Amino acid sequence: MLLYQDIIKDDNPILRNKSEDVTLPLSDEDIATIEKINEYLVNGYDKEKVEKFGIRPAYGLAAPQIGVFKKIFVILATDETGKTHHYGVINPKIISHSEEKVYLPGGEGCLSVDRNVDGFVHRHKRVKAKVWLYDFIEKTVREEILKLENLMAIIFQHEYDHLFGILFYDHIDKNNPFFIQNNSTGLTFITNDEKK
Image (cartoon, rainbow, N blue to C red):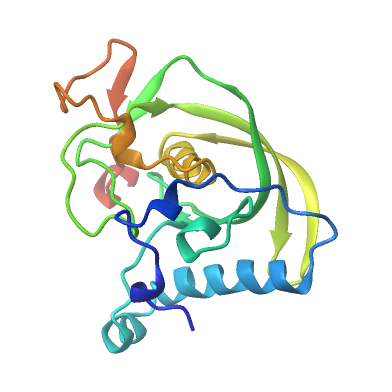
């Protein structure tokens, strides 16, 4: 089982390596990688395992963060409207994006960055990506076009960056960390009261 201490931290220069495309069909090794990443994210939703094993919950995790430099990441997150998204992503390629941007007012975090880094990360509000999606039940892959927006677009771009050796704080304006771009808005979440 993958634990938080197994995740490569940003003081290790290998995290800046670029990842290679995954050969399809998936090898047993690649299946094991994607399943291990998924298990970590699923365990992050289990309070007992979080406490027992010191798991730090996350919305996503990319293969480079566990020392595998292949274009693989998993997302398991609930968006700002309450819908759950679960993707095993292989060989993603962003094919289009909005000019409009969005940021998290509280900033971004990362399992590979074990400290708070203040500042806004402006990301495309909408992205369209060509991906191979891994089916965790059937253990198969299928090609698909994902259209994501707001929080899911932010998470996707964050994990996508890992495949190219980019960390979230690379996007923060060093001179003015809380600078708000003209075409960017802070993401707001719908509360249960607002849904009624």
